[in-house]
Amino acid sequence: MGETRPPIVRVRNLCKSYCRGSQTIPVLEGVSFDIPDGEFLALMGPSGSGKSTLLNLLAGIDTADTGTIEIGGIDITILGETDLAAWRALNVGFIFQFYNLIPVLTAFENVELPLLLTRLSKGERRAHVETALRVVGLADRMDHFPSQLSGGQQQRVAIARAVVTDPTILVADEPTGDLDRRSAAEILDLIDRLNHESGKTIIMVTHDPRAAEKAHVIRYLDKGVLTDVHP
Image (cartoon, rainbow, N blue to C red; front, side, top):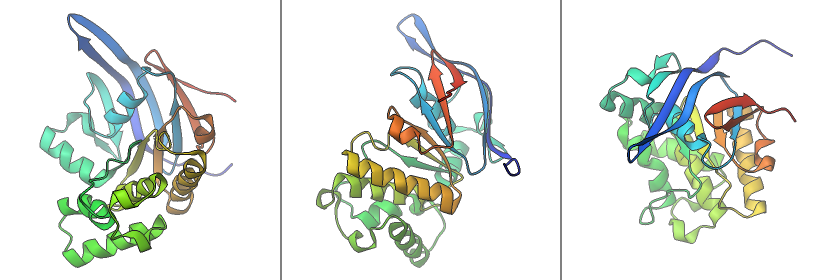
């Protein structure tokens, strides 16, 4: 079936728990897996199973209790807060369920936000933003505010913002959860294109089997344990 791609993500013996009062709640227990470069992975499982926690750990938003997470050869579990923030800005693109756009900024300005943390010139930033908005089919909406866009269009802006820095991985947390069926299908097709045509490594949390079908690999997380799902 072709040559094996090297892993872009290596997770080993990952554990995470939270404290609720005097009680310790384990969320992830000894999770280990690899994600090949260019993979499209869907994470499924019941509510409270740790899917979003795992996604946040991979994205460097949260920190593990024990274990290692290597992304692009860098063990992010040993980075300090400042270094982790700098790594995250360049290496992770986020796609959220509720878009997380800033209402007072135009589509262009929302997409430009991650680039303000880079050393790109104003002209270089404009070129990157225009390219990203073209990729998601919204080049003609760059001066619109979020309130002037449909839910599907707002999610496209969010995807443009996620890819504008050319990140190592894209993490998507229920990216179609707030959309009608037609808009959801369009967003999934766009994410699929980013994977197939741009070679983006995508890790997507979803409850929707139709969304998961777009992925190359589906993994199931339950009670802190990650397993393969067989159709």
